Image (tube, rainbow, N blue to C red; front, side, top):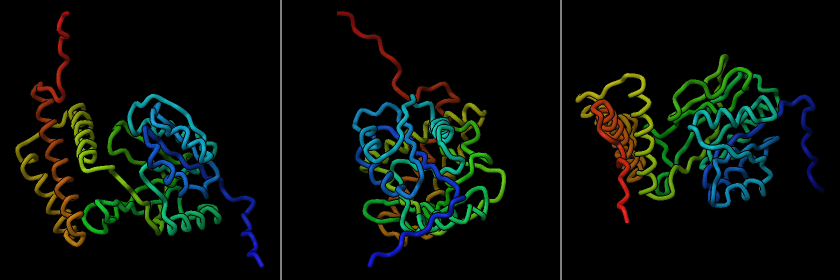
Length: 274
């Protein structure tokens, strides 16, 4: 005899999932599958060329295309396009695990009584192992919220974050994060982020100092690997601590270069005449 279908409260708030993507055909399918409990899935794509749009549409998502203007502004636009006020924001390389899904569904069925926003831990996979120590975990992020009370605010387009006006509650479970496809892709990604952050700090008048260049990367490593016990995650924990420290070093060097009028990328070259 089959089990009865759970009764859904008639006044249960509707929930929209919001994802931004660019050339994520190989990863977005798992992301969308983990969001099947949402009432709507909206994907804002930056004109992918690898079949991302087709994969998302096949999964039932509503896909919109928009030129990339920055991570924060792209995510804010996606939230604006949602049909419902309660939104759950993910990146294409993230998935909702079973425990987190159950916690979200429980809150939704009760009408989201605990606050206008919810945080939960993000657990990153590094070279075959999910990190449970260091600065990479629990890395609690605010991704479930009522857009009438907040959103992707501010001007910073890198390391963007949601803020809300009101109570923020904590949910059990993890947002599983797969931040890279290869080690070289991870390094390229970190270098891109370091450049964006350096440009943001330069625009705000911040300056690089010798202390920041020498001490900040060292402290980032010690804090992650020793203070937060990243060593318990073995080689992956050691790699994460080194990569994180190198990101701080690169950002500081790039900030110094900007203040001294030095190029961060190859300057345009004149084409030889035929």
